Length: 113
Image 1 (cartoon, rainbow, N blue to C red):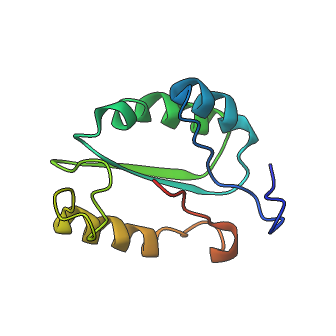
Image 2: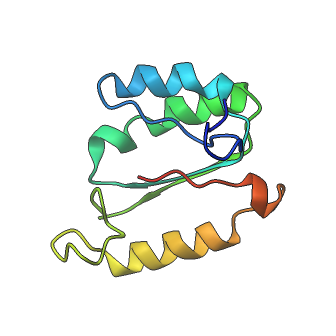
């Protein structure tokens, strides 16, 4: 699947109306490396990770995923102090910077969570 604007592969697709089904259906269409960060307390998203991980593996998509203990949805946004988790955000950012190990940086598009 390609973005109409950039023609680069889309790394992840998030469908909120049928989130779990949407992720699993989209996995075989993903062509770019994918990095996923979830807060442990964001149970709706974190609970989907094992099945999504399996679907990405089955589709031979290079991917990494992390669940951050004690973190909520939006844990990396310091503009919302009630959700911000500095330790988790710093680790997620470092992992994002370090991630493209077996793909070029031009091929890596981290999804917005």
